[in-house]
Amino acid sequence: MKTIILGMVTFLFSVNIQAQNKNVKSEVKTTVTTVKSSDGQKKSIKTQEVKEIQKIELKDAESNALNKERKETPVEVTAITSITANGVTNIVDVDRSAYYDLNGEKYQVKLAESGYTIYQPNAEKAAVLRKTSNNNYIYSSKNKTSYGYFDANGNLVLESYDDKTDKITVETFVIIKK
Image 1 (cartoon, rainbow, N blue to C red):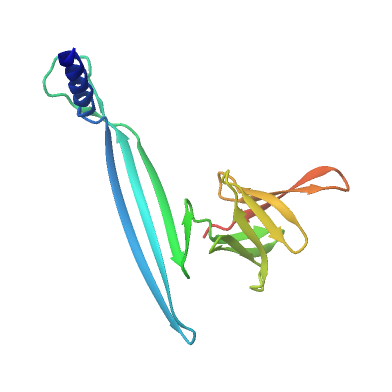
Image 2 (image 1 turned 180 degrees about the vertical axis):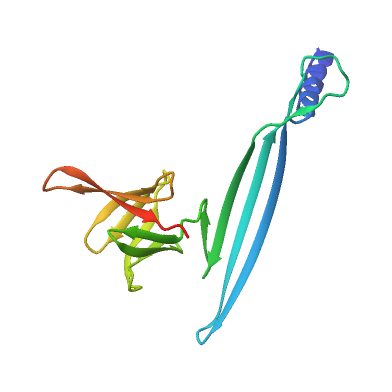
């Protein structure tokens, strides 16, 4: 009985020791920016972690050859950026800070402590974007609150409910690519 249990435990641990079937490469880049002004020093720390995961596959997996060649497989790349400013850490999967066009006006979307801030062409604060738990955003300005998300092209799409017409209106901030 003791031998059987000991044999099973040995088998379970030996299975865990087998070669891994993924090639993982991780790189962390940290940038510290210190700004001196009349208010004192402000320090912001930007940490970017890039992780590359590639499955390892063999060309002839069923052959009896001793040394086998690897088959090229796609690499999954994930980048996570965390920015610490004024003691508040903000984790950003993709930084969407850019200039956007809506009805011929140029708006600037800037990364803020808890989401994004949208500025009008005259550099006046127009609205804020706050991230929700399902990777969408709540757009809040003086006159409206909307549901927003970034589409595959990087454009900011806002969906608002109009209670007078009982319909959803869609506005798209088109990203300005340089």
